[in-house]
Length: 520
Image (cartoon, rainbow, N blue to C red):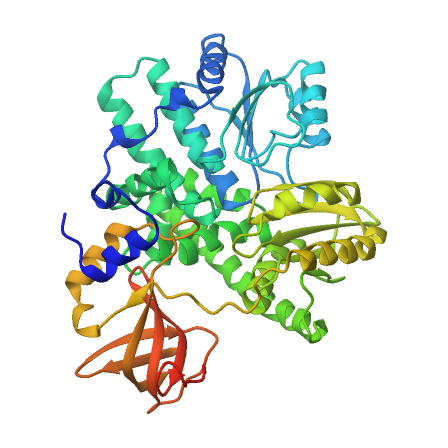
């Protein structure tokens, strides 16, 4: 398949050897065989036995986008098998992962089999309690293993929680002997939710995860769930053909807003309105309102955080905000990474006196979950993956931990002053419709497959409107979103543009020639 030279250069520079396979439309046969994932078949057979024996099944998810969508996937496939499971999503006040209070609730309600999704792999104590109370447990998780619980587990770091749930649903259908047409309908449905979660949860968009996400994105045009269709309509410029930017910055934040500001079941209820368009509209409107509240809250809290960070910025940031809502700690940590380019952990008051909860985000090339292993004595609990972690600790431990963690990162001498890396040079005359069509073949963009950034030389800032700028190169021009920079109309020089699907982002503008220029 033909690919224009600038995009071809991007893939070659990223070490993509089989370019044709990378860009050609995927088929369901390109997905990894679910049976290849350890624990998948044993877990599927255990659940099917529970279904045959009419056992009471419950699902315990998580309060973020990945956990919510993974819960919906499992609930949907179980409904297709004739089971109406109890779906339980914890409030953030309960903390991350399976907790003893929830286990007791499942036991008292007569649950025979509990499935955890997007958590549970390290819930050794809680799962042992469940087993002692007569509740069998299946774990579906992708987080770093610390102290694995002794139970049936479907685990892989290649997929997010919802991605594993989608593959588990497919394995169930195959083991149950569904006809091919019915299996294909299931694949089309669950892959859509897995695509959103894969992009939202910052798992590497490579190999099986990239294939699953591409397959799911292709199915959005045929989405049957009213709630999903309404969510796409309100979040995306082109609801029938959203790109990864739409999902990452439109759909996912609205789903996550429920668990950050209200309760995650608010988001889950969107997808319960599978056939009711009016109910779907109302539930999505509620999510949109929560997302607007979230944006205002993050802006205010980040301003307060920046006020206490004095230059020079330390090698790592560990920040405690006494009045900070814990639901936005992760977003604040991400904004700190973006602004200060150092690993960042933001802490907020926890539900229990004397405890704080927090979220951390990392810079490229620094495995945050691995680094925190040596500080685990400071935490009541922690978990996560390379780029994102969650933790709980005593308030009195913050100072010692912050000092030790900052010293550790400082010793690594991470590059804090790296400029935005360009993937190559582009001429606007070649960046038309044909370029956009080929750019879409590189989707989805995100962790492990970042959106390409191109250098444009000899450009002029033609006009500015709010946060939008029009860049002109000869008689050709494009509009881009300004990203923490404020060029002025009439400036001439070179710039870096990030081609994030249908949206272009101006990442840097330099006056004059490239060597003797200054960044604006």
